[in-house]
Length: 175
Image (cartoon, rainbow, N blue to C red):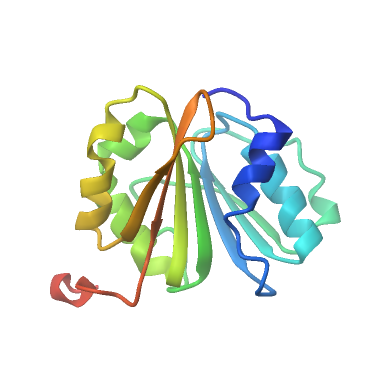
C-alpha cells in the first residue's frame, strides 16, 4: 500500500467524532502505510486512547513516551477475539493488505462487531482495483454492519466505512 499524504490523513481524521471525549480507537495494520502516525498525533492531541495492533511488523517510529494512552501489541489475525473487552471502540481503522482481510473477512468483521460500541464506525482502506471491493459490502452486511459507504477521496485507495447500529440481527447468530 502506498504512503498517505498529511492532507489525506487529515481527511480520514474527520470521520472521528470530535463531540465526545475519551474515545477509544483501534487500528489494525501491517505497516503498509503511515496512517498510524496520523492516528497517533490525533489521539494524543485529543486525549483519546489509541490501540495499535500490528500483523507481521514492528512499528518503531512513534514517540510513545509522549502519549499516555497508547497500547501497541502484535495481532494474531486468527485469534478468537481481538481484545479482552467487549464494546470498547468507537472507531476501528484497518490498513491491512487485502489478503489478510480476504482470508476470513466475515469472521474479522464479526469480531469487529463484538468489540465496537453502538454507532461505532469501521474504516477500511483498500487499494483501488482489488477484487475485495466487489464483495466487501455484502460481507459487511452479513456481519450486521449498516450504512456501508465507499468514499472516493484518494487516487490509490477506496475508503470503505460501515456503522454498527444497536446490534440489529446480531442476536440471531449468538453474538
